[in-house]
Image 1 (cartoon, rainbow, N blue to C red):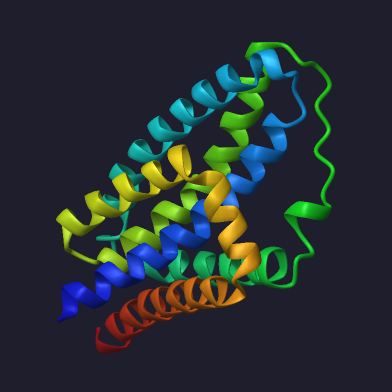
Image 2 (image 1 turned 135 degrees about the vertical axis):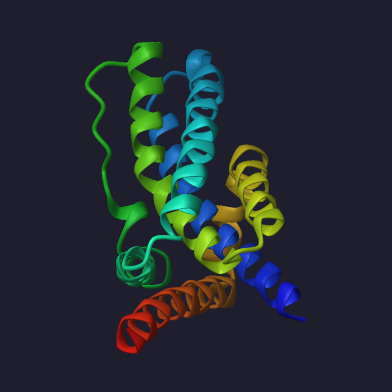
Length: 192
């Protein structure tokens, strides 16, 4: 039963955070000419995949260090607030104008990779926090987020925008993980 709850949390976290990444990547890619847009998306997503794998390895290790779960939980609380403002209240991604100075293929890929690297950390942190010590579920969450981001990005972004309840469920899942991470470390320090 615990693994089923963890799996549901991971899917909801990936759904909402992949939508956040999808919105940013789509907005960035839309700023470039059609002839290089697919190349930009391919190389930008490829760089993001490498970043997610790297972050997953680091975060899975770091969450075993006492005190860092508290920091991770606080970061996820901030992510929950940011997503609430961006996705639920619609004050974020759609209203921001992303300025790109040079439309070369390399600059476009770097721009998307940098944007997604910053967004990938919160996704990995949420999934790693939800997975706890279930490394198979952690790997599943990583693979699922990559698949969602690479293949279903446009649909996920539309679903979260159209069906607000999906966004609310995802935010609730992230909030539960954040509170659990904070509680685990606070409880450890109190019992010391």
